[in-house]
Image (cartoon, rainbow, N blue to C red; front, side, top):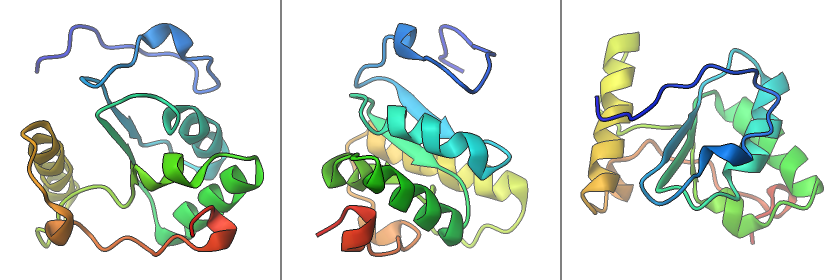
Length: 130
């Protein structure tokens, strides 16, 4: 509701003209893996206040492993919230949206919500973790 601009553009970028800063929240919600890797590789390096990617744990693993192999730093991948949202027991698309927006509000307000988040898969060394 506070968006100054809504952009519709090809998913292949480049996106450097967006002017990302700490007030920017980036959510990656594409239909498949083919665009996620390129977009997340760019988004993880941005100074955004929130970077999240929707998808399964298998999708996360595949994308993170590919990005780590490309040289994306573990610290950049560690800031990505995937799965996105707070664990509210959401089942429907509307409920999932509420859980994601709830997490974004908590981040915006400086709340520590780690224990309320969906449990992230531990990032292995192959994925760029320690």
